[in-house]
Length: 389
Image (tube, rainbow, N blue to C red; front, side, top):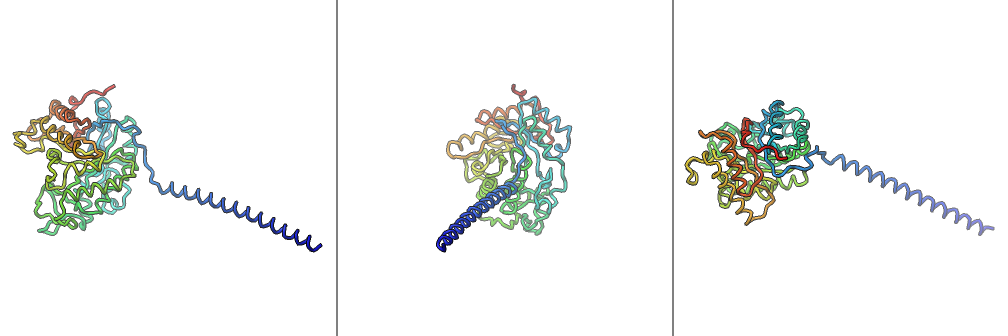
């Protein structure tokens, strides 16, 4: 009798243990599912959200520049959109941060708030602003001036270029202050601006003034970080690599502007105009590189050309033909997309013939994308082909 009771007792105990084990495993699995679900939610919350870009960006890109002031004029914007719709144009380049150092729209960056760079907003609703272009399948590029930045320099003199004679902030010929191109704070600021732009649906960020100063009392430049020993072009190349690495997971195309002379002498790797710009350094790190090949910006008697402004085809062709030489000798990802002149300067009127001559020169060097610059945003419609069906 006692042995039977013992067997029953052990059997009951075994049953209880098995039941408890199954219960424990179910609870553990439940917690695991909840934990996994919570982790997924947390990860989604932490992931940056991005506004809708163009699903199928046009190619080649043919665009025009739009200033911050024009961006604040709804009628002018409407007129420019109509111009793009009715011609071969398909893109616009809008100022995000110009020579003033102020942003066109309110960026969500603490440094912008601390420096006051958000205090002169021109576009109140940037998402709506971009959407009006995207609805017409117009590619939207945001232009950002980097090292020429009076607002940042005045707020953060510790990273700004000083005047070695006065100890005050150094100024160029336009009385604008500059940041030391070696400042890592400025590097990260540039990358963070691009990320903010991506969040609002910009298709591309265009980095301008990615160089050392070119005018002013150059001999009195005093840099807080650059040691004046490291080659300028090497420093700028490192900055380009930094941007490329920091933005590799950000859904936005990138481009950089360089001087036209840097393109003309692209195969002379010792030549950086003393501002750190060489075409070969930009090509590996951006989707587009835009040499500013405005004929009026080349000095008289340049390369045997008495008045370059009067020879738009020759200047643009001569500046861009080196691209083919670089293609044959180096590997890179960038597409060359020049800035072309659509403004009068140096006593030469730029009519449709001269604007079109530049476009032809680009085509003749194998380049099919281009941008037109006019600071007043008044473009020569007769120079543009009608929209293709």
